[in-house]
Image 1 (cartoon, protein in one colour):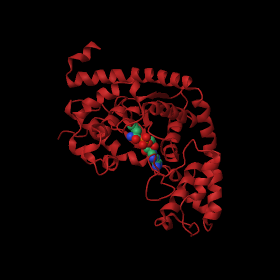
Image 2 (cartoon, helix red, strand yellow):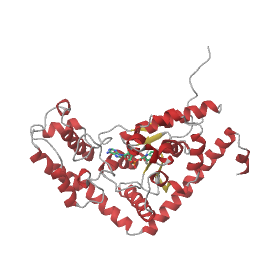
Image 3 (cartoon, rainbow, N blue to C red):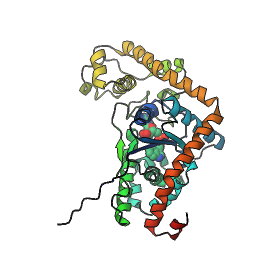
Image 4 (cartoon, protein in one colour):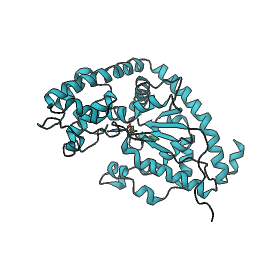
Length: 347
Ligand code: TYM
């Protein structure tokens, strides 16, 4: 009997992730993604980009896109990412992402993309009016990851399906081109209390840049008063906090605030309940507000300091782009050889 198990990937471990410059960064982005980037940079080679190619799948005002790209870079650094340790760059500075995405467009199947829930949510009732880019968005995401042969991708829970598609693309490419183990089957790093932060106004909707209500989210650039005010106004219920997580099942807003407290404090939900069980929101909310202000206040202040010097941010992003390209180019050359493009040897 032949062994059907695909060859394992034997290359180095690498972290890759990105955030779209398509609106104000919020607490969900921070807890679901940014804090993980800062932690992982000390464990593996880490590349973190600003997903400007993804952002334009929905029209972006050009001047705003440039400003938001710098804002995201500032948020990365303010959350602890060190440009001397990690590589920070704009996606568009590395054309290899888009080139590999084209090849992957020819590997991925329509049926895979038809299943993507995020496209369905974002295109809404008028799918025919959405950009073609919005539809093939997850294929570009697979290229972002695999152009660096990234093995670990820290993201929030909403990206799970895109990462499953990335594994499918990698597996099919390796199979179709007789290259077992060429691309890794990337591991998503999702777990943790910050993986799914919900809206402060509706415990059944995720906290999102596109929610029309600013009270639904805490932005990283909110000042202390705004942070405290949004927590004060957060929707809750009249019951005190229970002793077990099970008892929060039917109380999504309460569950969310406990999760935010835990994620900000580096504790588990269970530990937070152990401390606050029996107390109502009148007591819990001020404690949460103090914690949020203490943790997020310095991040916002550091972002503002960094954004006051756009030339320095541009210098970091440019150097990061050059470094990232040096890793991406050889992968693309290998891919082109495998696909049979004679131009592969001319590079
Ligand atoms: P984006 O810009 O929507 O979000 C950036 C990161 O924040 C996480 N996130 C959340 N986590 C917890 N709770 C929430 N409410 C919440 N909202 C957002 C997201 O999961 C994400 O990790 N497609 C990606 C960008 C991207 C990417 C990639 C990521 C493009 N290519 C390659 C990883 C690898 C996106 O739109 O993220």
